[in-house]
Length: 305
Image 1: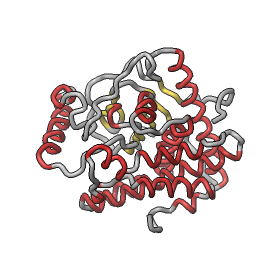
Image 2: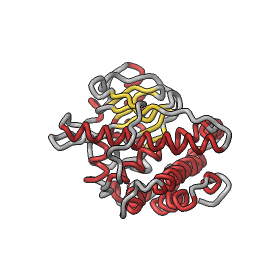
Image 3: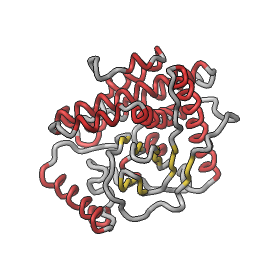
Image 4: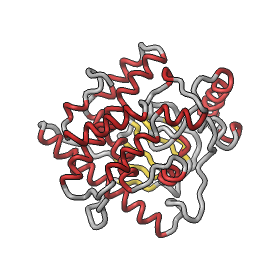
């Protein structure tokens, strides 16, 4: 991806030195990139939920009880740890990675501002918050173990850049455009928020059972993938993409599909627990948005997924 020398967004909030505070209160649902999950679950899952809820109420860090990665990244893997080569270690590479994130965010701003303007709307730029380990948001407490996420309550994308290292080393999804896809997916949720799609989803899910809500969540997530593809379409038209970039993004979509993650983490899949979509679905909708560049082709709610 030919990103160096391009405009960088001013909408970056670097909270890495201030991260690691206590738990915040509850709030709107977070929309995140999954980094693993144990389906099914019985008592162990109930225990994790109870500990996390207690942490929210009493203000302690539940990871002290759950242990390193204990249930926060179910299925193993533990918390993300930093070393001297980490993108968030404070080395010069950290500054370059921040510049990369700011540039990708700027590209999403330009693309979506143009699309909204063409439809008689005004695009509101989201903020992107860089944090380390854990952070408070309008959606409550967030740990880096949960992956990047978007909070509709404050219109912000939250990112611990060590996720990029994990994406490469643990999930086999390397490349700059794989990282750009992750950012574009979360910005896709912001687009859903601005257009009222997300609020409608939150209203609908209140009257749904868990399985039905998961199915609806899959449609929300696949649409965000499609929106990321739409952004990639216009980014390619600018001549920014290099050979292999889109393949890198499609591989990332494959590696974070629900079925692939469950197979990797626990050796089997539980389809009714999927809430982001299978690898094939995520690749299909990302490619669909990229191919056409049309929002009308991203209607995951009225088309088979």
